[in-house]
Structures are given as C-alpha cells and as structure tokens.
Image 1 (tube, rainbow, N blue to C red):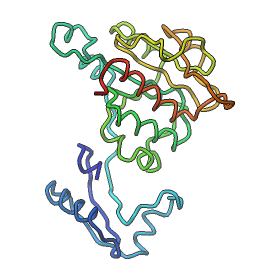
Image 2 (cartoon, rainbow, N blue to C red):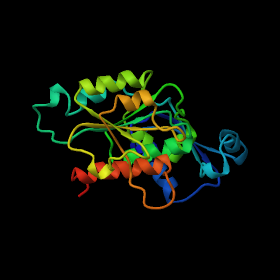
Image 3 (cartoon, helix red, strand yellow):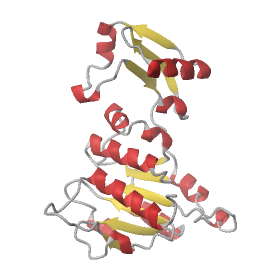
Image 4 (cartoon, rainbow, N blue to C red):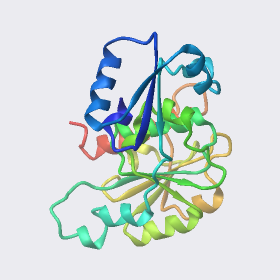
Length: 247
C-alpha cells in the first residue's frame, strides 16, 4: 500500500486466490485508480514468486512487481535544500537534515533505518555503491514501505560527497559509541548530515576525520552499544526534537 501511495513505478500486482480482507480491498481500489493490472494466482504460482523469502518475510498474499529503485542525484538534494544559495533568500525556514550511511550491510538494519528516516521525514539518505546492502525485497519489507517515500542518493565516493555537502553549507556529524560529546549537546540549528557507521566497525576513519563533530548517545546500562537502526531512530528523534519540529 505504501508503494501504491508513493510515486514508485508498479508494473503489476499478483494476489493469492485465498487472500482476502480490508487491506486487500484498499489495494484493489488504489491499483484500479492508477491503472495497475492485478492478477489472481494459485498457491503454486505464488510460491514461485516468493521462493526466496524467509518465514519472517511473509508476502501476506500480495506481490508487486516494481521497476528498479530510482536514485536521486546529489545535486537534487543540495539544490532543493534551504542550505543552497538558491534558497537562502526564500521563506523556507526548515533546516535540512540528511543521513549518510557508511557500509550498512545487514538488509534488516538497512530497511529499519530507512523506515525511521521516512517516519521522521529526513530530507535525504546517502549510501555508497560499494560494501552497502542493496535495496532488495528484504530491505523494502523491513522499511515498511518507507524506502518509497525517501530521496535516496547512491554515490561512488562518500568522502568526496561529504566535501561537496560541506561546500553547500552542511555541517557533518559522526555518531560514535564513545565520543565525549553527548547528542544532547549537538548543535542542530544548522544544515546537518549525520554519518551512521557499519554495524561492526563503525564509521571509517577517513570519514570521521572529515567530520565537523563527533557525538554519542549516552550509555546508562551495562550494554555498551545499540543496534545501528535503533541508534538511528534515536538520532533522528533528538535532532528534530531540539529543533522544535516535533509538535
């Protein structure tokens, strides 16, 4: 349903014969409105379409065939941002907020991060073309459709991307487990791009060194770190809370 509500290009929808319910009726309504064909299939045909899904990734009786994910050029985010020169004289007072993902390799984590980013209306998510989980059916499922509502940029060189963002007026912040500065002390009143690091090794040193500031989420219990997707949700919440946008 999130795919139908967004601008993603859905080619066709397949529905299991035994599937029924209110959600399915809404899918039929939205698909008909957009001229998207729907075909009913038996359990054998449906099984072939979902053979690569695990038990935790149930298709729930519906499969949509979509075109490849559309990635935005970095220039689109920079030019549409209030940080850019073309917007400095405008009345748009919203301060831009981006996420930069450094080698997130677990599809579930990646999808959950995209879900949080969409929930908090992050202005864009930047990922690398290398050592990054691809946006596949597992990621889309874990994002609960959030991936369809985000501007996602895929770049070859994240280091160069950071420099381009700096030139456009962004401050670059890195999330690190033991950084002395608390997230509550982070200056969020500026155009901000936060780097989220790899599940095991965190943010690469070359990216940390180019950051303007490094911060951490305060640890209260005995567990030293949070799951990367949970940490990202906390970061998104705190940035928007301190900006007064969560009203």
